[in-house]
Every structure is written in structure tokens, then in C-alpha cells.
Length: 378
Ligand code: GLA
Image (cartoon, rainbow, N blue to C red; front, side, top):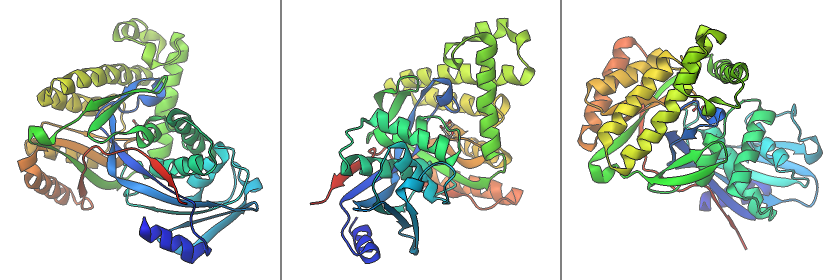
């Protein structure tokens, strides 16, 4: 914080009025079902985005990042609307827009969430700015309101039709627990996730792969679920059972059928995972994680060769469960392993990637960490 405060002063010639921070996330289970009103079970990671902000008396908005301080982006607040200029700055502008901010601000951001790794660095950035503005302008918005506003920023300003999971967990995550989130009404429950006392570790494997399908493929999956819901006359996949899906199979295309099958079975797996976690039954949790990956790979078709190799190599090295996380087509996988097997698992994945000629993967571990926070500076 001290270094971002110093940079802010050097850059803008004044002190920041608020500091805010928000974490990235991994998802234990419940993938591609947030936009189907499902349940998800993510947790906030230790890596986070930071924002230092001060209000301005005029309408100027200035945005810079700690990494590239020399490049200050400027725009008038009245021009902050979808279609505006900006590159990564759009994540910040989108939040100003969706929160209805009408005065100028100076903003400096920093962060440690690896970008492109599928760990929601963009949601972390959006949420750090959102909680900062919420405190600075006394907007008194709840975490749920902020989750909806930051999702709107990403959907309508950045143009990515994401669901509500990443922003919700970045805002509402709790140290030591996974967050059971009902994506229909954003109610939450903290589910203690104490792998360490069970002698386990959750290894995060960043495949460093980014396939071109990321945006189009995501929108297509979402559209398939919406098409199934409309053909079956239900609001979302949340309202579907396997029995009803089977009974109406002939109304759907073969692709729609398997996409819906993923959604229905994944929602059920999340609830089973919660039961397993409550009983500290990590063996069952591992099996559910494996079943989730198979469903994402085969029915939802959002995995990719690098993710499958990471998962298969981890399992061959003895992981209890392994699967891709996030939107897919690249990014990260997780592996639930014995704490004593960390090096063995890393070596197995490294060897498998090398044999395939893939880029070297990166490894992270993180315990469930606290969600976003902001503090005003006197
Ligand atoms: C991305 C989106 C989320 C969610 C996941 C898949 O991370 O931002 O809303 O849909 O993919 O579970």
C-alpha cells in the first residue's frame, strides 16, 4: 500500500483519498453454471488488485497502472460510456459508468493476480475500483449491488458476457472458506475449506495457453443454455432435471442436449461437494472434481489439450481430483493433492508439457483469502 501511495503522489501530485483491494479467485466446482442461475463454490485467492483513488473537482478522469506509470489515460467523465476509447482501462471506466459516477477522479491501480491465467484478474480490478468508489462517494451499495454493477460493467462496457461468479467471490470471499453462491439471488454461505489440516494442498496450474475461442466460445455456450431454456419453456437450467431433459430430447439439437446435461449435472455436483466438504470427505470431493472436468471436456467442450494434459498428469501423479477452472480454452487447472506430493505433481506436469512441446506451465498455491475491502485515508 505504501508504494502505491507514493506512486500516486509522484504521478498526480496529491494524496489518494481511498485505498481499495480485491482478490482473484479459483473455483472448486460449479463451472459454466453461474449464468444458468446455478450454485458455484469458488474461493478468493491471496493475489489481488489494488486501487488508490481521489476525487477531482472537475470532470477529468485519469487512470494509470503502477506497472506503466508513464502512461496516463485521460477522458472526460461525460465521455465515459460504452464504445469509449480505452484498452484495459475499460474495466475501470465500465465501473465508473455502471456506478453512475459523474465527477472526475484520479485512479492508480496495481495488482498481483496473474493476467490471462483464468484467475479473474479483470474481476479483481473491477471490484477494487468499485469498493473504492463506493467508499469514496458514500454510495452505500451492498456487496450484492456491487457484484451486479461490476458484472454490468464487464457485460455492457467491456463486452464480455460473463456471469456473476467472479465478481461475487472477489467481493464476498472469506478467509478459510469457499463461498457457496446461489447465482439466482446472490445469497451465500461460507463453507470451511481447510485442506491444510487434512494434509492436502490445492495446486493451481496455469497452462499459459490462451486459445482464440475464449470469447466466442463462451458466448456460444451461454446462448446454447438460453436456447434450451426457451425451447423447454423454463427460466434457466436451474429449473431443469435430467429426467425432464431426457424426456424433451427430441426438441433439442444434439449439441444443446449435451450442453444442458453439463449444466444440470454440474449444479448437482456443487451441492454434493458441499456435503462432502462439511464431512471433510476429500476423497468424494476429488471424485466430483474429476466428474466436473469430464463433463466440461466432453459435454460442454470448453477444455483444450493443455488443460487435459495438466489434469491427466496430475491424476497420474496421484492427485485426488483435478479439473480445469474458469471459462476454459486455456487458463488454469486445479489439482487436489497430498501436501507431500507438491513437487512430484509439478514434475509430472512439467514433464508431460515438455513431452508435448507446450509452453512451460506456472504453478501457484493459495489458501482461501478475504474478499474486497476499502479504507478512506484521513
Ligand atoms: C468466466 C466467467 C464466469 C463464469 C466462468 C465459468 O470466469 O467470467 O462468470 O461463467 O467463466 O464458470
